[in-house]
Amino acid sequence: MTFETIKTSSAKGVLTVTLNRPEAFNALNTLLLKELADLLEQVEQDHEIGAVVVTGGAKVFAAGADIKEMAALDAVGVMNDARPKHWRRIYQFSKPLIAAVNGYALGGGCELVMHCDIVIAGDNALFGQPEINLGIIPGAGGTQRLIRTVGKPLAMKMVLSGEMIDAKTALSAGLVAEVTIPEKTIERATELAQTIARKPPIAVRLAKEALLKAFETDLESGLNLERKSFTLLAATEDRQEGIAAFMEKRKPNFKGC
Ligand code: CO8
Image 1 (cartoon, protein in one colour):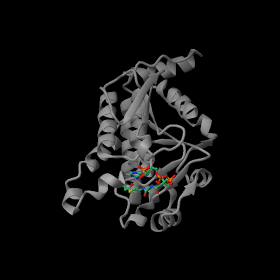
Image 2: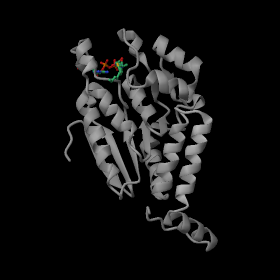
Image 3: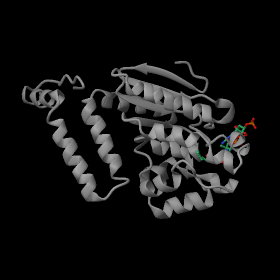
Image 4: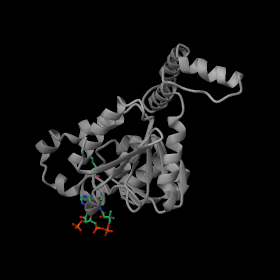
């Protein structure tokens, strides 16, 4: 697959995707979202890849939806917009997605961060939902995911005022898992992704699914899903291998079955 708006590289079970529209601060146009969603669907079938890092590079993660592209859409155009479909495809990716964020993650950029499962931020990162300044509101899940992630007071402040928060605030609010120096953001995200890629893939997939379910269901239904997945894992060879390796005091050799 060749891409216009993203760059890819892979090593040690990890695919790194770099958003590549530097001239527009990596603004997420339809093509970029489509390419990212297409790529993730392809990775779904690639058993060599256990986790994916998404980054904008050293300076900026993404400054939001492409405002210039958005400006051309009237209400019917927005209604027929292909982007919500691509966002859904990104959200449906079953393997871990790790964001490595330096600089701005605004609007759709912050929403892309929230589509990721773990966020590593450089101490230069700035997160915001500035859509209100454009007379709109977040449109890729920002109102729902931000409030579930950071709670009502901070989510309301960010969405209603458009004010950004820094990496330290994002860390204390739970939007970000770790903060590092900007030079190490991608390295640390990659290291974490490699650690996850070495884990048993079916257990990783079911753990992600169960954790995400907590966003959208009641406790009893979530516990039911967890119990079913826990039971299902008892039928995998990787569970036998993991337990045997523990007993035999050796490293497990997981095969994804
Ligand atoms: N879209 C398009 N181009 C952009 C965007 C953007 N979001 N952000 C920056 N750019 C472009 C600028 O136009 C400029 O290009 P040019 O030199 O050709 O004019 C270049 O990037 C650099 O930008 P600036 O000159 O403005 O750089 P500054 O360092 O002064 O400022 C900022 C950087 C603070 C990031 C500033 O550019 C900014 O405020 N950008 C817009 C941020 C924003 O409002 N984001 C929200 C967009 S709306 C959104 O994301 C809704 C998501 C809904 C998804 C729904 C899907 C269905």
